[in-house]
Image (cartoon, rainbow, N blue to C red; front, side, top):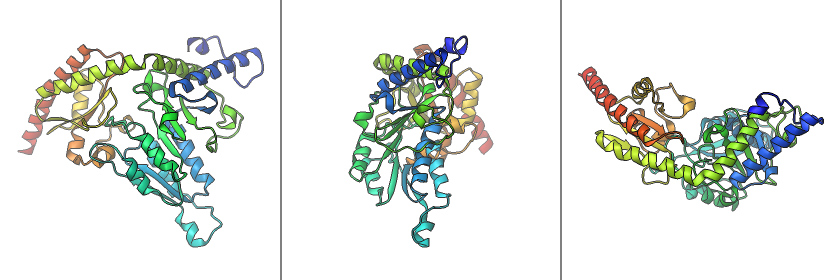
Length: 376
């Protein structure tokens, strides 16, 4: 990225030499991102975030349908999906049909996962209606780490002619993701989840799938997103994609080793429970509950020790309320509030895991004791 942050400043839309150089860099990155997910460069749309990419599909779909029809999502989805779908239900339908039909507007069905942290293809297919416009199923949950049966979900939706949006932000760079094998119509990824820069993401759009621009006012990105491209960030995203593709197997093995070391070491901490271990999970994520402890207070103790964990989605950090996704799997609100999401990265080492386990051992029992004393 460095040259594009210093001496190179061309606008990819400009016809002069500096602009052409920037255009070549953007298109090279588009090829790199497409190769990571088994797609074609022409199917890649650069955005500023996964949230923008998800919003683009949901807003565009509902506007194109006159804010009528039916959407299917799950309680596992990221807020950028769930809240966008709820926004659609609040819009005034533009139907020219009868007044009674028009009042229906957009309807949303939110599916509940099983205790394994997954929503089955059969559950999704059973929820489809004659006017279902879109199904949203993330590839892997950002809190529990559970990998969803997206290919099976997409297969069932194809039988009914319903397009599928797959939020793969959490999965890309951790496990193999191939859009052809998944069979979805739209797929979202974000650079900061696989060691790329923040503030840049991409939306893969299956050739022939409809897309209405969210941003208007220019011909950038093939007319699909008006806005001058963020060349340094896009270049960084492309390089991160190329590295992730080349190193995917080694990265997954490294991350899985750290996660397994961590979960094995939890045996030394009484009344700790790892959620959804029977399911296929991302190799770098553990969602663990410590009975009798506030997950938020435990997070603060670890933060003071220089260890960063989360009580749930980073988009909700600081809100001490039970995660809807975790509770939907049958975990009690109390247990959900006693939980932490622990994620490992490529720069972590086995020594980091040992330090984390030691810090947890030092923090958990005093927190339990203080809570017990307050209860008395």
